[in-house]
Image (cartoon, rainbow, N blue to C red):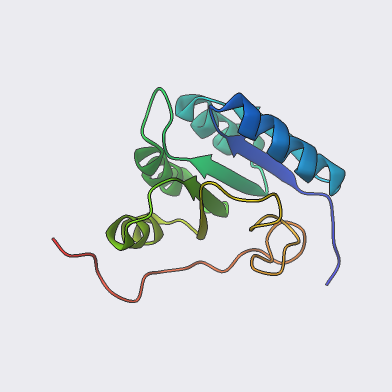
Length: 138
């Protein structure tokens, strides 16, 4: 597997998280573009075609879960959802909506980013497209 520099779109409105993740990802050799708005992220995904999106769900303009569904309408870019939502139903719904993987907050810098063992993302192979094995209860 050949590691390469990935273009990562970080969609997060918490400045502390943006700074920490940007530093970790840049130190790992990736290029990071950050935005706090889902609407901007949708534009960037269609225009700039990043290699990976790290998507927060609690965004100020559009809920991240809705933004994920919109992204899936225009792109198959790998998306890792970073969320404080921990319920099994929420996670299943996110995976069924098109998330490739997820991490729950709080997380450490090496949790599931490009090149980490859990997620062979933009640092090498694309993350696997996960689908929940069962449906969320109605």
